[in-house]
Image: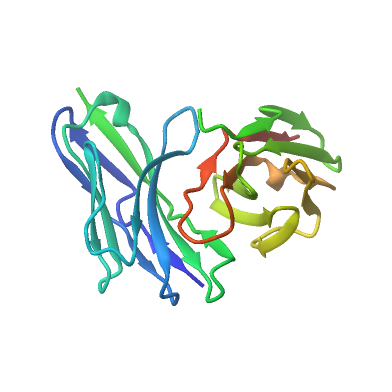
Length: 118
Length: 114
């Protein structure tokens, strides 16, 4: 079974500043992928960024980047130049792939509520 | 807009009743997933279908069932509803069950059981 730990229930950041959200996970699978989703007050789940575990290079998507440490099973999200619209609940979600490469499951952490202060 | 469509958006029903939630995946996506988000349990994976066949099962109660039809839309049936079933139910889809395909979520169906 996979566990996902987001140790920061809440975080706050000043507009235009940088903030890092942490995530650690535990998986027995050798093949997996990692995602960050955001959930604004509208409750819609929006994909922020994805990382393939077999890639050493950290993913970047505009102001969002990750720090992926495979050995440590750590997958943190850095938001640069924070904007008011970034305020949301952020979920870390590893995606496991079984040995057959077909069945997989997205498991979510409990989330980090990010507040952006003007 | 993710391209995943869920209906209804809001639903209020009484305990003991049965409801059906409907999901249309993104065009071209063969795999559909159902998730439940409640205050106490967080986001829980319920079930996955790929091209009409069940592929993976999570914490889905026996009172719940799902299916995926030939046109790839999916329905989640919730029966003998209890107060604790009140939650936001998400449908999500991806191209196929293979590894690495990004999973896109619909806007969810709010279910309130009174």
